[in-house]
Length: 119
Length: 141
Image (cartoon, rainbow over all chains, first blue to last red; front, side, top):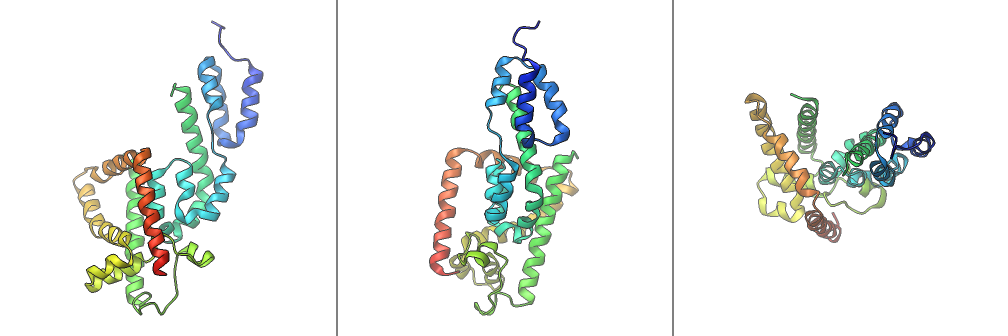
């Protein structure tokens, strides 16, 4: 039953290079999940594009009131709402400066889970 | 009610509350009634770059609607009319949903997210927003 199982070094490499995309407390869970996946799924997960939380923070500060930060992490509905309300009367713009990094990491985890489920 | 749904309804209620407070503040302090005298704005874009954003003028549109000038309201910012309608019907729908334990608003939100995420819809939407934005700029809002 060892065919198609990744070796630990590859997994650790992936986790090291991509740790910033996820919440640190989720990394062990991600590692466990990767260990049990076969080659195809691993490939999908590794070639998946993840959003850099720091980059999103920069976007949020520069163009947050247009909802671009939310659009970029894939939350189109929230982005539209933010855009239409002029950055939620400015309040949402400021709130998102603090929330956007966490939200990016959550969305990254969602993408990883989708990739590992075969999408 | 599961946490996702509860989060949505709380957020929605918060947005409505904020909207009403804002409208009330604007109305009673004549922020936008003086015909453009006061230059106060919450738009981060306008304060930093001097260019209005696509939804600039929404408050002035709301003021216009309250005063009864519905045609004029459209000329200030059509999006403002959309927001005003949302502000008007939002509480009603919210209360009905809560009282009757329905999730009409939440399901509408989920459908909206699915529809707007489609490429074609997004392109059309982006185009309309861009048009409105350009219009805002030419109007010097």
